Length: 202
Image (cartoon, rainbow, N blue to C red):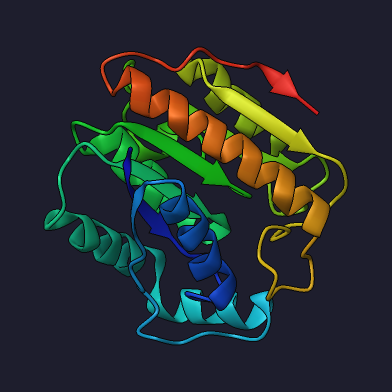
């Protein structure tokens, strides 16, 4: 069992994100889903990104850090798209992280002015032509972390969220299987050891 802090994407805490959290709970994990959009949910990603810009990235980062303060340190930090930023921030800078699960987004480790922690397993999931994801950045981060990069065919961005126009049921099912397998291995190894990387998969 892992305790997971799951950050929503740019449209807000959608029913799709909540359903994904329930899938993880059904597998025995404890999942927290902070709402750092003040309850707002947007019909399109463009509307959500406009709201993100209205709030500002520094404030969103502050809200993410605040969401973790009352929780244990040995968390798996997870996020979709926009939510990968706070997940990565906490995994890299808050001591004790058990792992990081970044879906449809990631940043260079240098964005947080610290190298990737050597004992924190990493998994990155994205389609191989996602216009919102720089694959060179993803490969560089995974190489530094000794983690897993899983590529899915196509260009869909929020393919795992059934409330989004990009939803792809087959890819979402594949993501769930891969994530649950990875989380199981993280639970077995703990934060003190890397999860053996599966390498680049497509």
